[in-house]
Length: 210
Image (cartoon, rainbow, N blue to C red):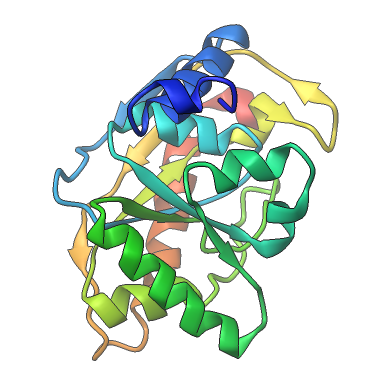
């Protein structure tokens, strides 16, 4: 992505790189549900290093990823985040939330879709961790149209932690979009329950993951 970024229109450097990786490791994606053409924020469960590449290849949208600040300091990899102007988040910092909101507003003004793993980290168990409040704060602030996306067992297909790889079709589910409503204090918690149910229901259709 780094080598072609200066030479192709946005966001094609990210898309081309993601497609290259998918083709290299033989991972077809079966998409369920309908992407919302007016989406402003994606919330996605996170299991595997593959997840970013999967999302980049199943939507034509110009995604603005929110990632922990530490990743922006990793040699070489930091360029993958800095070049497309993804958003750094200093976790557990109240002052950083002000910057997060400012950065998200800038990316939204440029027509990008804020994309967040609300768990804040990967989990390979299939049980989603509690969602962090940052996503709700941003969505509520700007009354964003949010679309949840559920990836099924991506850690089974690829886990760098376990040094494990299984080729095969990965399932991605677009759930119904909604407008964030700050008057509902529980919408993020309820969304986690909804996403977990969608995950569990789809997982039941695939015995290989059991």
